[in-house]
Length: 239
Image 1 (spheres, helix red, strand yellow):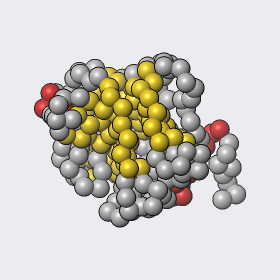
Image 2 (tube, rainbow, N blue to C red):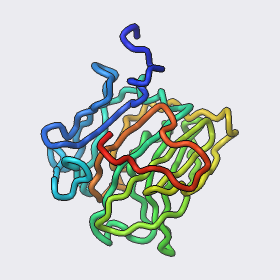
Image 3 (cartoon, rainbow, N blue to C red):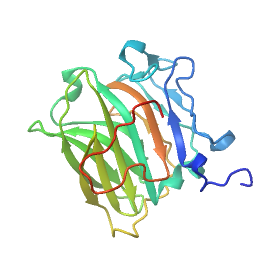
């Protein structure tokens, strides 16, 4: 559209959620109208629960097992991320049962049945190892899973980020780069342009709910974190 030059820095952020009181579902990106990705509540209470004492910055949305947030279907902006993407957020797991062995909790996803895009998740194996996990589809019908191990405890805010760069996936967790994986042919692979809605705290199965506080969730069409260093700087303020 004439009103946007999507390569400008102001539009690098596709969706941004501060989860602050009074604006719990607001997308604070520069996109407006039908290109904005404000959230709606699906299941559970009408609006997200916020809790200042458990916030990273300002207030934070608490997502329970009875509900999740999903944006309206706005593939025009959401699918700007099929070639390069960063998803990041601050997450604080609330209790040990929410981290049970053999379970997956979805931080954000863009998946529907036979309409797969991607998903960022925390997975705990049956042996008890935690992983930051990314699932991506190049054709919309099959998903490839890649992951890197992390250390997780309850009651602590962690910054997590996953980047996608034409087939190369990088994992960042609380100040450390956790590793690199590939899906498809690095340098040319493109994620499927799924028309599924962007969901925060669940995927299309509604069985992998995030049971945590979440603050400052951001989806970008650029690589926010790069380089081969084993460390990175955790954002010190709200996005």
